[in-house]
Each structure stands twice: as structure tokens, then as C-alpha cells.
Length: 113
Length: 118
Image (cartoon, rainbow over all chains, first blue to last red; front, side, top):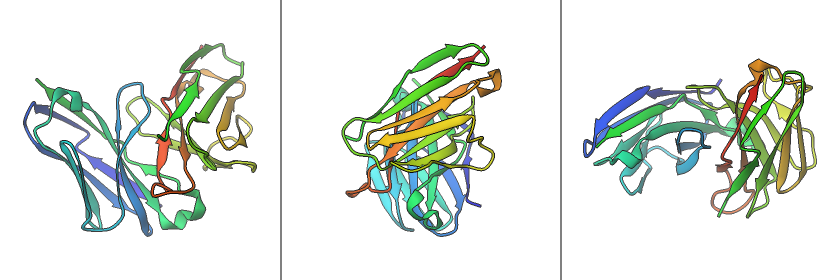
């Protein structure tokens, strides 16, 4: 069974204070690892897809990295508007043509001004 | 691109009634759509996967007779919660997958529907 564990559950930062969110996963053959941002009462917003260990992707203040067991979402000099829940999800090759995602519980990030 | 809409955004109903939620892909054709449920402070739990023109595949523990899914076209899927009860109150989110292009395995999510059953 595919499993995704995110830590910490909640993270409070001061504006400008860089940090990282962790996503540990167990999957029978990784097809892709996804990061999403979710604001309260909204659907998830796509951020990144990573496919193989060593891959890195960046978007503004966010950088996602991937190893064979975990992924990190690095946030550099965060701003209050970066406050949201960040979700990690994995897609297994064994899913065939279903392409279904297994989500972690998310990390609630709060950035104080 | 890759915009998914849901309607309604919020619905309140009485116990025992049925509620239909629509999910539309606005600028692409989605051969596969997914329905999730999210309880407060919990992650998204996949309920079912629907492929256009065929029966939906339900996850273990999800009652197919209670949560009816129809995916009649490449841009529309509907979820009907039949005989809703207070424990069905939740945030229902759909997603759609584009079958081609560089993002072929990515899912694009709708804004969600908040269901409250009194």
C-alpha cells in the first residue's frame, strides 16, 4: 500500500525565515511525486511534479527536490502570502492507466509579517 | 489553461435528500476524472475514478450505491450523494486528467464543493 507522510504537521515562520517541508513516501515504483498548495476552502493548486531521484524544480520562492525515499519543499525568504497547506502526493506505476494519487495529510504553513 | 470548475460551491440540504455536484474541465478534454472527499484538517481521500463512457471505479469502503458517478462526456462528470446524512457532510473535490501532452499524468483540481447535511 502506498503511503505518504508529511512533516511537520504545522510550521510557523517569520517573514524572510527560510525553511523546508518534508514528504516521506513508500510506493511500489514511483511514477511521479506531486506538490500542491491548498488555501482554506479551495481546491489544491498544482506546484511541481518530480519524476526521478536527484530531480529539482523551482518556482519563485519554492524549490522541490526528490530522493528515493523523500521529497523536500524548500521555501526561501517566505512572505505572508505563502501561508497555506502544502500537500504532497505520489503516483505509483502499479496504478496502470488510473494515474491515481495518494496524498499526505499536508503541512500547514503560517508566515507572520 | 487546465481549468476545472465545480458547481455548486456550497450546498446545504436536509437529511434524506439527494445532492448532485458537477465537475467540468473548461479548456481541455478529460478522459479521466477523480472524486475526493476531505474532512476538516485531513488530507484528500480518493473516493472514485471515472473514465468517460464507462463505469466508475470506487475505492475500498466507498458505497457505490450511495455515491453515484456519471462521466457522460469528456468535459463533465457528476457526483450524486443519495439519501444524504449528516456524516456525509464534507468538502468534495474533483480533479481531471488531460490524456496528452507533457502533463499527461497531472491532475488539475476544481475549487471544491462544501456539503452540509442538516
